Length: 126
Image 1 (cartoon, rainbow, N blue to C red):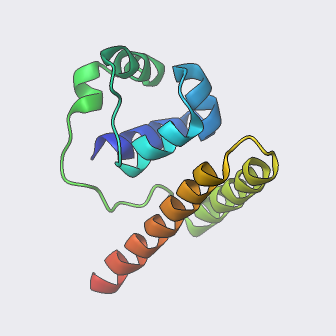
Image 2 (image 1 turned 90 degrees about the vertical axis):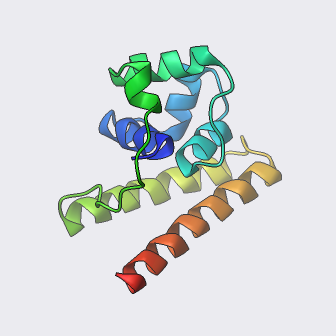
């Protein structure tokens, strides 16, 4: 599992939004999105330490990476559907709240689209 997959998985297990995690870390929501997408990593050791503490992991467990997983995060279609509905609701609020710049909104949208197309491609090739 990659660092980004761990951040996403443990954040969801805590039922935190990306914004809530960002606030606890003292970073922007866009930064958390980029961690989860694997496009960036924390620049400061303290950020790794804070993440590990929040998730109840050691820094080594958080940082260690293996091959990306393709295991579903949800045990049933109903659970996945409920999470998707929650995500859409949060995204609507984030986009309409005016708290993101146009550049940040575009980055979030690109990341979501890329995640969708990557999943479709994996499904088509399996």
